[in-house]
Amino acid sequence: MANMRAQLFSLGAAEYSVRVSGGGDGSPAPLNLGPLDASDALFAKLIGWTEVFAEEFDVRAPTFPTWANGREVQGSKPVTVEAAHDLAARMTGWLTDRLDEIAGSRGAVAFHDDLIYGHEDARGVHTLCAMYGVEPRPIRQADKRECPVCGAHDVFAKLPDTLNPEYSIMCDRCKWIEEPEKVAKTSARLFG
Image (cartoon, rainbow, N blue to C red; front, top):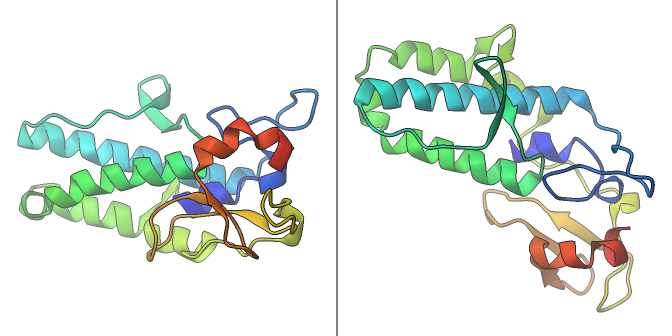
């Protein structure tokens, strides 16, 4: 999910907040709609299955910020890489905590097939991994910014990965690291 969201726009083209913004006139940043649609479809799929199993097991489903088209959940409101990673981790954690119950449920096969293989209008994890990869795309030099510590043009957004689930802003040269929330306050200086 985070990798798909990271492919929406480059570090320099967007503000990392709930509202995506572009240049100085407030116009929207150019987005790559393929990963946006794919991540929204995967998000909606996870929401749908948490609701199905919450009802079947008579437990409370987790609540997540969504936007909807009529009654059907279409995707997550936040477009940030960090928020997408967090929401997906919370949903999959909720499902994983109930995996034994899910395996014995009447919807187990449909759940497996929907997540793994998907459908024409909502691809499964295997197809999405083939399309968008499981590793973050390499950071382009044009996406890097000047480091406030060493002055090198090597600051980038480090995405969550299997070795480190945290999202941070760091310098590739001096290894300066900052939390995204703190960088947002000075984003005009670093990323503007």
